[in-house]
Image (cartoon, rainbow, N blue to C red):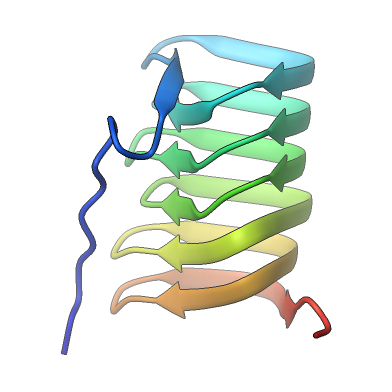
Length: 119
């Protein structure tokens, strides 16, 4: 059984980063992939992949144009993933989630509802 995933940051075109200790709130748009190690809240649009590392926190309404990897914490009014949602060991997601597909790993914590896009 596979219990981990690997992320190639260069291949995933992750060019934006919110470092640990930083906070961004309000309406944000990222034209590439995004790495979250700090806190992001509000309405967020990410055109590519989003990765939330262990210390990362994302809150509010989030739309991603690619896969989303969560090892940190997402407290979403709505999380819309136009790709696959991966929630790893220690990752937590709460709220309403809509994704093309999802994969949960041992130790993932889900509080809320997971839905798939209609085909």
